[in-house]
View 1 (tube, rainbow, N blue to C red):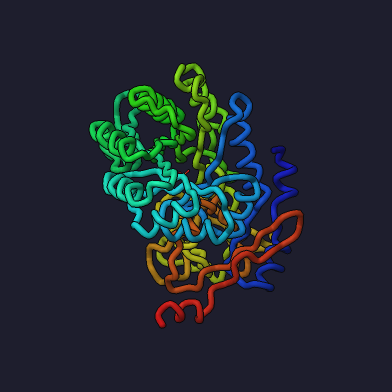
View 2: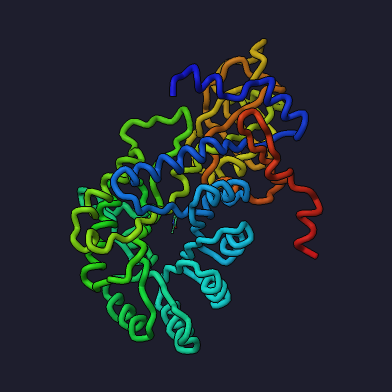
Length: 417
Ligand SMILES: Cc1ncc(COP(=O)(O)O)c(C=O)c1O
């Protein structure tokens, strides 16, 4: 997008000040247009070459109901990994649900069956449950999916599984697949989905070649001829906020082409033509939320200059990593201090440092700090800690809708009664 357009579309100081007067600070803005654009761009990257593609929006990444409802309206499936998320998907009216996750209690599995969810089994106890259920309910046409454990490596053979782990723990290891597939088949249960999600530390395109290749080999080895869903999972890069260095980062097309190059030349795949499922989370939602916090005080202590704000690190990076997120100061530009500052939060914890050693111009009390790219694993992970949860305003075509109000004392007390 040209710079002038980005600048035109950006919210300005007057608008933020106006919102702050109405709903207080800190607050989030949600940008539905960006979310829609990301989802359609990801889907069309596949559809250019293969029409059978479904996006299952990963609700754990950000479960703000107004956001999930957009995904639903766009035809996405809800990808859920717990009973809580399953309940939310049902409550929001999703008709199509993918139920993943390593631990699924019996009650949750029963609910998922009754909602005709695609249930991707992760462990043998789930196979036990399904076989028992089918035995007790022979008239029910039971269909399941299987998550396979995929080992990801880079070109040097080093593991690229999240956190550099040697082994990820999710899904069925190859040595127990045969037994479990046979048990399901013998019980009369169809295997309609194969799931290969594997979180990586590098989100590299190569990982999806490995995942697709392994999944194809499983389809062939075990003749999974009932398969309808070829689910490569999530963990992609994308939806980068403005200000992030994108050199060498993959595009949606890069992932789509890597997967399609592999599967479209495979005979089994050509013959069966299953629907490819992607489960995007961060890659469609990271840049959909921005955060605004107000400067209360500048402080100089020893060798350090601090900008003290009313927000907190828990609102923007609850995992407390040390990377500075893209940011911007909104001010009247009249005067203020210049220099290198730590922007620090309001939680009375020393490590509540929102931005480390950032160069700021003309900063003063009353200004606002905008933090970009807080859409993924932020709002869902923010605890009620010291402060009330901040409100979220959805902003589209100049129209603003409050999609979460600020938390109140009643919200906090009710759960303890
Ligand atoms: C099964 C599954 N699908 C999709 C995702 C979404 O991943 P991301 O937000 O990295 O795209 C995750 C995240 O861990 C996951 O576990």
